[in-house]
Image (cartoon, one colour):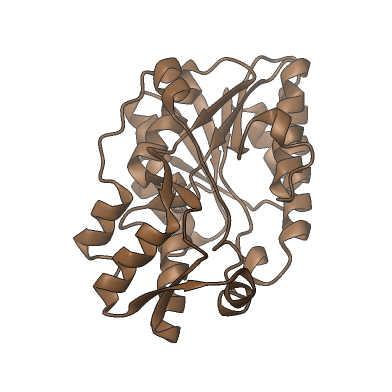
Length: 289
């Protein structure tokens, strides 16, 4: 197939593109800069210059593709307090692309977070985007929602949960967690997550929901203790109020995420083969840069 990928040069996209090429697909990657275009071409894909605000360009790319993998997102908007705004813009992207795929049976793969029935009143602004994607299932689009673990870890990870958490631990001298730290974060190695996307392009039926998490949930206290050991600081329990102030630039410390993967393994024949989160922390690369 000819697969159009947004976010092709990003953390996850740069792992998905080679997987798709290895599976025999022709890949076209969206690139918003010369640097990104060079990275896409270096992976063996065709680079299409453009960005997520060029809706007409996205429509044209969708018309010329057999499948679309939508990984692009304006992540900088989260850090600047514009999460709801960029999520609304992402919904416009979904409607622009999927509108071109109506009644074609072509695939559109986008990011989901949990079961569709749990998304209706979800507080995350991206839940509405996932619902919009799923809605096109009834309009002749092979929609697939891929739940990406909130901790997607590897040497490629520069701006995810772990780098953000480490920055705060270094700045404050403690590795904090809320209460007993029993809340969990789903985790998956970047290359295992990428494999799910590639397999889903080939195998997932319309309306599917799959997960890239290799570990359904890792207790945050365990993560904090590992970070504390590597940094030579203390792991410290905090009240919800203390944590809200301590982690004001990272409002995710108290979330509780679980992503079982048994159904995904069965549907796609997926078997994770790369290191766990704690193994990657023990490998040291997060702490040496």
